[in-house]
Length: 369
Image (cartoon, rainbow, N blue to C red; front, top):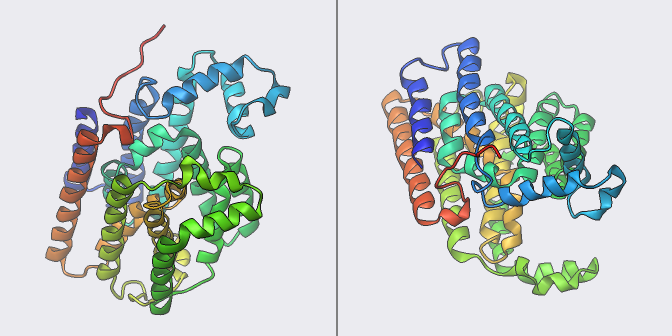
């Protein structure tokens, strides 16, 4: 765990020592250094780091033994199959898969933060402390899909809906579930009002209460009734409740902190933020609402946990944007310190007592054969 804590301290030093946000150039150079370090740690990790890393490690070797026309012989999507085949031309060592994916993921997340965050050092810190980095070390295919969506969001911000949909389709070639990100288009069309907050709250409560019955109905209609008794519908109380509590705290904190900045207020949040080149309060509020909905429903149906990673990374923008909205500098500073302390504790506690959730502790580097 030491390596992750040291990186978090290094990230914080960028905020308090060199003031990473003082200019566009400083922001860019700072993120290049930070995500360069994160990339190296991820790229040269052992296959034992990350709950699913060994699975992908072995999948790479299997795919290299197949021909291109054997695309349908494995359960993996075409995009992942093709990626492994292409990387195989560079090296037949499975470590090349970890190196290649780490470079792409680090670039995409760093660019996402650079383009959208009010405070790049704070966002980079949250990327580690909220265990999103640990999550990406495990969910390789889904992480690749998410990062493609991150890049596609830049087209959506310019109202290039068709281009964004193309990005979603490409992402789905790595993880089919990415198709749900088409709902982001709605986030740019709707206003997050007091009524919308009430509606999403009701839907979340209803979803938690009736999700099992709804799941059985839907699976029977589409011909997958056998899934209703599968491992995907079992409850996952401890892990899901813990994560839901964190997301609820983050969401409520953001709503309470948002003030009349850039023409927005708590209950009248438009998408005008797109004009500033950053994702708006409204977009982020919708994303956080869906994230919370998915996580709370996952308490009773673990399969819903698969939807959470498509929304939880918006916390990296939501919290800095919320704190930015606090006008009193002393309160703003206190809020930031409290968030830093809380999330560090969250990271340490989870990776100490629930190492099986992400499998990134203890950290090990790979060994050349």
